Image 1 (cartoon, one colour):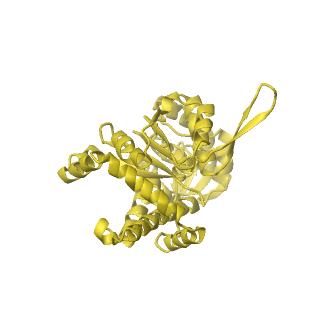
Image 2 (spheres, helix red, strand yellow):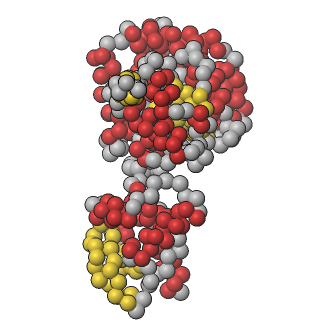
Image 3 (cartoon, one colour):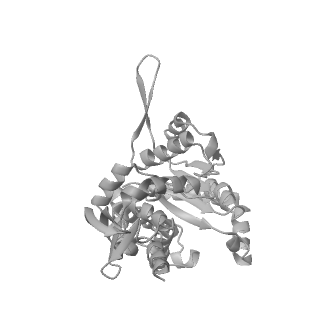
Length: 357
């Protein structure tokens, strides 16, 4: 069982940093928050191995503003920590030191991670100014932040309850969670949601220990909580679908916004079912377009892109000769109906209609 990271994402002034500092961390009787721009690979590993209870808290997480070295260090740490890998550092005497990366991770920032593999290892809370301007939400938040001692006691009570919980109980809760979430979700995301459900069950056990019913303490039952958890995962992590977009799909989304010329760069066949695209001629323009428009995200080398495209679900054929624009061109064929069902590539069809008119 692997435990997801917590990401608090939202616009400036939406309350995410205050939530991290005044609600989340007090539950663990902690207050330390680290600026994402100040970390190094060593400090990440050193702090992570110090406890498996107290979370590492990072603020001001902005992938588009962080330098590449620090961003890569954070991303590698997020992956290694989730996957329970060891951190390794070398010494001057050629010996090595290993660090068990055990600490939970909580991240606050205005941008979510731009890599799908990182998003799949996290659960995300979305913040907005609209929410904090709601009088009821604002009053509840102020009540929480004004009762730091109660948050400390809640954390201690949850720890005592967890120490009194057997592995069999946790496995039972985890398996119960599988019945509440769509099995079509990516395995990693599905398991993360089951972990959240197990956490809800732990909170329910605490309520029973205190002689309080769940419905007396919370307005939603387990079923309703699971419903909202899955909705948040699909909307915030998976763009409203059941899968994260692959790099190839993200690349086609960008290409569809480049105003490629129909009849020169691509054509349709069979009533827009198949897209014939001259990738060889446009790929360099595509990489330049991303750079000029400051589009963040991973860019594959040409040959690696072609290799991944060939093994995608919407691939039909490669290096097919097709005459359009008065010339024979070597094109790749993709199933446009499948591709458009997985990502937003409507720009291809829109420009085709404009050219025809």
